[in-house]
Structures are given as C-alpha cells and as structure tokens.
Image 1: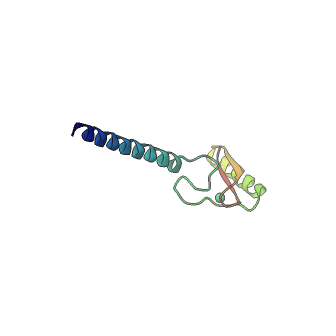
Image 2: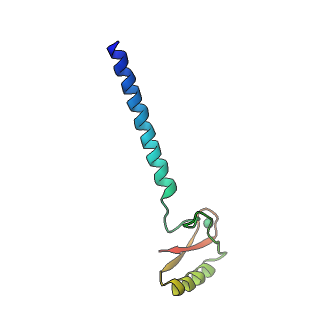
Image 3: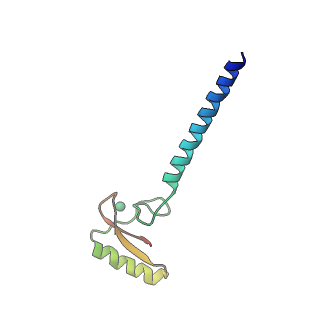
Length: 86
Ligand SMILES: [Zn+2]
C-alpha cells in the first residue's frame, strides 16, 4: 500500500505545481501594462487618434497640463494612435 500512497502524493504535487505556474503566468500577462497599450489604467480602451500628428499634438498638450511627459505611439491592437506616459 505504501507505493500507492507515494504515487498519490507525487500526483498531487504535480497538479499543485502546474496550477501554480499557470496562475503566475496568466497574472503576469493580464495585470502587467506597458506604456504602449490599447487599454487605459482604468481598464477601458484608450482614445484612438487617426494620425501620428494628431496623437503627438494631444501628447504635447497633456504634457503641458500634467507636467508628466506623454508620448504618441501606433497601437498594435486597433491600428490607431494613442498617447501614454513614456
Ligand atoms: Zn488601440
């Protein structure tokens, strides 16, 4: 009976470890945000600008208002341009 118990414990350990690694991976990708994102800090889609010039202009205005440097970038999700903190 002892080998069966050991096998069961090993199986449980493997299940626990795989669950842990999956939780770590999904948490790391979904919660981490970079500056070049389609999503705002509050979770809603950012405003999209039709051209890089329009986005740069908006970024300059925001920088002047908030004193925090904003930069314009092309979005990979919606093919528009967004602004974000550098
Ligand atoms: Zn976007």
